[in-house]
Image (cartoon, rainbow, N blue to C red; front, side, top):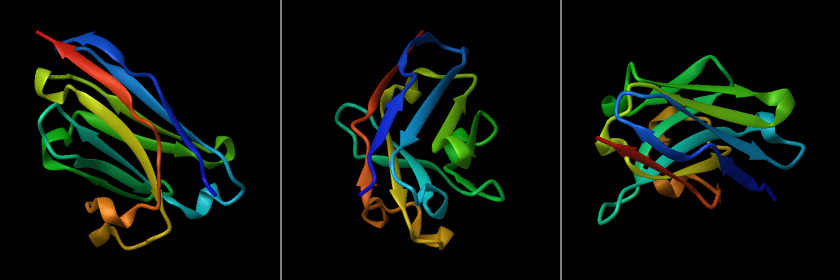
Length: 125
């Protein structure tokens, strides 16, 4: 089993940066694709970004150029650096893990086998 714990959420003013972390347990972390989803009040949970090692990354269009995903396999940790935050980025952000290596599947919630509890990100005007 894989356990995921997100951290780094909080309150930030529009235009500011914030970095989220997701730490995973388990000895097979390096074999997992790590994804981030977010869910705003009254909205469906939506895909944000995913990474397979450091060579393959996928971002939703709304965060391209602002968010950067990276991972440190030795530390069992994935990071989501969020810059130029906007109020519409406000949501609960979830870390997720899957062993599905095909990027065409990463946008789907059903692809992921493990989920963290989420961390709240609030962007004020």
